[in-house]
Amino acid sequence: MSLDDLGVVLFTLEMAGLATAAILVPGVASALLLARYRGPGKGALETILSLPLVLPPTAVGLALLEVLGRDRPLGSWLASAGVEVVFTWKAVVLATAVMSFPLLVRSARTAFEEVDPRLVGIARTLGAGPAAAFWRVTLPLAWRGVLAGVVLAFSRALGEFGATIMVAGNIPGRTQTLSLAIFHDVQTGRDGRAVALAGVTVALAFCALWTTEWIVRRRSGEDAP
Amino acid sequence: MSGPALEIDFTLPLARFVLRVRVQLPPGVTAVMGPSGAGKTSLLEALAGLRRRARGRIVVGDDVLLDDARGVSLPPERRRVGYVPQDAGLFPHLSVLDNVRFGSRSDAKAVDAALDTLEIRPLLPRRPRSLSGGERQRVALARALATRPQVLLLDEPLAALDPGLRERILPWLLRVRDEWALPCVYVTHNVGEALAAASHLVLLREGTVEAEGDPRSLLSAATVVAEAEAGIENLVPGRVVAHDPGAGVTRVRTDAQLDVSVPLVVSRTVGAAVTLAIRAEDVLVCASPVEGLSARNVYTARVESLERTGPDVTLRCRLEVGGSELLARVTPAAVDALSLRVGAPVWLAVKSHSVRLL
Image 1 (cartoon, helix red, strand yellow):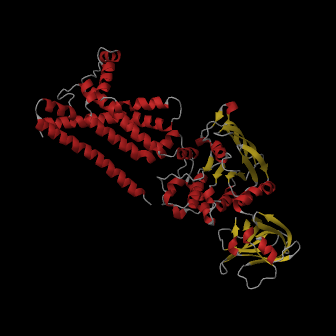
Image 2 (cartoon, chains in turn orange, yellow):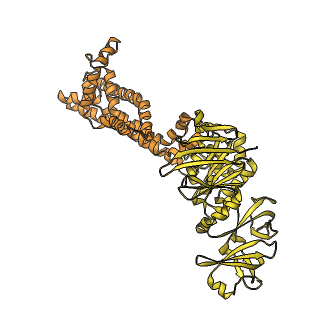
Image 3 (cartoon, one colour):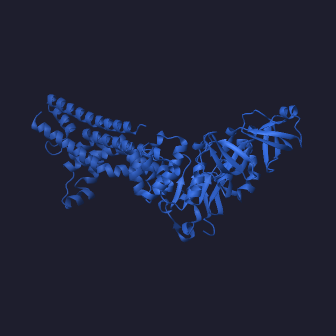
């Protein structure tokens, strides 16, 4: 593997890491909201949050372009503030974050739903405020699902293609991630490099998933009576 | 403390009806009884602040927990209630010790005292899921006590109607009542427990208070329910007189001066007030004096009345010693065979193991 290839790998890991970090708090908060909220508008909210799962990634990318393009209100405002998004690494992070978000929310939400809300109520009667009850009861009981969601989102971010190419383009050295590089290599007839990079993506995803599995297993072993 | 320990006057809309409770509870233990689905658990949850739709007024001692006319509705963490739900509600990811000291108000002293009262020190390193149902209840009770609550709210599960005494929360509740002097609202399905523990009783039905007052006078009216549920029980108040480990018995003298032997229970101290529970069908009836019987408790009595109860006959017998009553349940065939009639002398025998100490 060349230095160039290593650069692509590190860049991809960095982008996926940033995207995952960016969605961690809003993703967990949305998951908690969906798990506990029982009011009107819940169905609509659920649907909107899940849309990126089923939409063509290119359509999501196009939507982001429509919002952030330099000739659009938000895009031009950002540009005037000196923030370039489209066709920069920020666009890569944004696109992968949007595409990974529903995976984190789904997994974390299921985990939160499995926490008996009455345990949270009991924690409250014992003197814990809502925040303390979350940190001391809800999260410790749901962390496996939350972690699984984080890894899933990270893995998805590693391989994001459609939305990224729409808003960030495929600029070697600037916005080119592994999946974009594979596409680029196949297009330009460098099949050998494409296969090598594809192998790297498999290895990365495998490591991420296996590590989670390992952590979860070890912890549940400790919990056994 | 003078005046009511708890002032409760609130409404809470539930799925099938509106729960309306307006009662003033004295210090001590108040038993809450009623059929399943009467709103008993919802009442406890409303007191604990876990039902945000409750409207009205709830005052514990001098603290106003809820008064929506004045915009007061304390969140659960500021109510200082010790809530023990039906399934104990222990945190599965924490050890017993960490469960007990979970409360933010619990200090080392309160935790220690709670561990001692409920005798759960041997359980401390264990996880809740390795505990029996009774142990879980005790841990949950200790966890609630460790927060130094102003009032205890206990929801006794139906499942706790199992035979093992240590599996039942009642003896521990009695200890808490006597050692901690806390007002307590105790949901139970068991008439015997209500009589043994409570100084006040609230009967709930379909979300409304059907009756409230002295358990002894109220429950005679409600015994029909109890009969249907658990058979007829003799409930005899008394005091522990002595422990005899050699003979394997604890001797109890009833308030009517009757001596009764029960299987050794050293956890109840000599002099402690207890209630003996003897199922009517466990009382053996003999038409002649008994000798050479293994039963430790044999009493001379006279039949006062015979009453058909379901397929059986219930005999109301007046004991020679102390003049107290004991109910015995026999088959109609036995009535014929023994020529049982009003006024007939009988000898009643009760095995030690048929007597439960409440």
